[in-house]
Length: 445
Image (tube, rainbow, N blue to C red; front, side, top):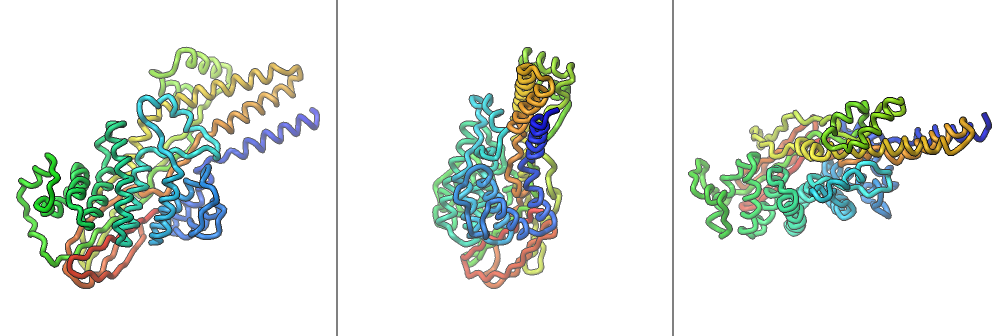
């Protein structure tokens, strides 16, 4: 065999070795978080971004950079760098588009699940919802109601998309956003807008504890709905709030959602998954290639395991345990969203595999030298394999679960202790009559 042929083989090997997926590249970041080392995770994310410090943004938010900035926003929030987290969330929000999941776009979904790192990341709707929702936490931690209201308005655009385009009204992430947006407008004195958002939150079981806080607002505003009318007619065992009460809101996120991983299944099993959708021609071609031994496996992205979602977070206020209500199971929403498109993803993987192998066969027959033809065929298939590498990009530092509590307290000094997954936050706050504070913990391990 000639040196040129050997060189071609070496190049092919190098090409195949260079196919590490996004989730492979970010494994050290996840490992650092698992070890309770969020600042180490920040260092690694900065290296991916090519920047020197947490306060720097890359010159261009292209390719994976927008997603790295989004991951960094979550980690910044977890170490209470709220201003830096806010800036990262907003930069990522502008750079990341949403994956269109309407029926009219279903045939295009396959284009977005096989990509190289230069492709623009397209977020599923639940991720776009949570960018604005979690950024409201940053603003509320800083008592910046103006910024929180802006995020609430941006969130409304996404909420309307889910309701009007996707016909999806049962997603509890809408409730978390509604609660935080309602709180922002309530504390800013806009009662009707607050009631509008609280009405959204009360549609979900995880926010029923809000009823005693929302009920007194009904006498101050004009906005009504069937749900709020029913709330007004209910009796309450809770004492009416004192005029000099202060208030604490606690938000605890913990664990991490299942991230995308590259998945391999036998071609026969893959065909079974899409038996009702694949065309007869593609099925015949896939079976023919499998019978010839040319294809035995199909690669496509899927979701891995949730991290730490079954933990029980705790809140202690002035030495007394306070119950936290799980408001959102984000992992559940991630899996539900993925299930809607997984069939299309597998079908796309099969049809692209057929194209790849066919291109390799054509390449081999195009040359008379069988050795060179074989390597050229392998090179063609290797190149297409790189292009067909499953896109495992996702927001990997997103909490798996979120719990909340809204607490009336007497004016004065209060000690708050939050714990989840071995991560702790201790704060002493002093509140005057009528003052409020939002305190969060994001335990991303």
